[in-house]
Length: 386
Image (tube, rainbow, N blue to C red; front, side, top):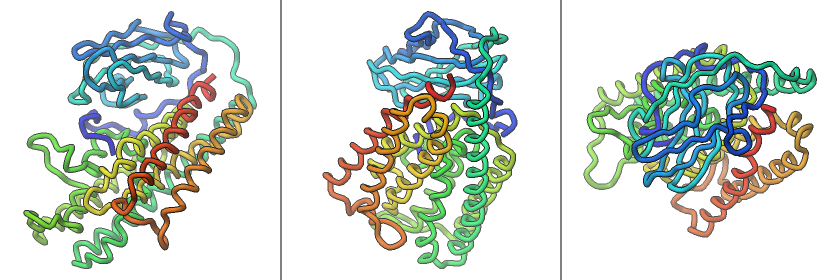
């Protein structure tokens, strides 16, 4: 998971979270390739314009400050994450592409990746019309998003069932069974992590790492129990049965909320493509570094699940992408295959070797394959929202 500092707290609803697909006509705002220029510094978030017509919005974000930054487009409540780009190092540039209907929004830069960010009001005005969406393309988009919604529903169902069984094993004192279940059950979470993370109130409760705790923040969720199942050798005091029951019950309850919120979710094509890219970013910034599962070292299970989720989103969009850019589609197919072959080398039984068993050369090989896939994957949104 990403650092908790990248989260925007408080509850959001599934209905408010997701947009129906707007007419996808690019907005020419005078920036490079018609994008809206954004300059993020250590104390300012300069967005080139304060409004744009409905359709495809492209924000060209440059980090002109000295701290790693992020950029968000938020809904009118300041909580819904419509789209985001993360981990923009000083001097670098990233593009956020989203489909947005008419309404009120906020933009936000987060220098240092902490707090609520530097916010500006942003208005999406009535669209200016333009060419009708090709009927065949529209059908392909509908097919992709419908298939992905079914996938999310299935994964959260399996997550709910698995979490209940995991919590039962843990609270009954069957630590061995709980350890065996930990990584396989979490794979259902990791496969749909961008969807789960879009609920800013739930994700920190369920997936916060100890290293990302803020002062005074209570630590709950999977990694709290992970540490108790794989305790450090020095200075760790095991949880009491009462505390173990408390955290297990909360894990189940919070997972139930996620399950309930995802029953009737709908998606847009850009949410699939941006979500796939976000999953690869999760691999690059957490799993490939071994920081996610610091106690259990089950990072390769998470790695595989993130790749699974990205691949499913891409494959759902592949028929449309093949029509619009066959070369890019072929490149992605090849690089997904190459990355999977590398992962397969580290399989052991029904799972994987522990991450601390990998050599530095093996970690670098995986990292290079992720980067090789991430670059072309970042181009998909531009193609599917045209």
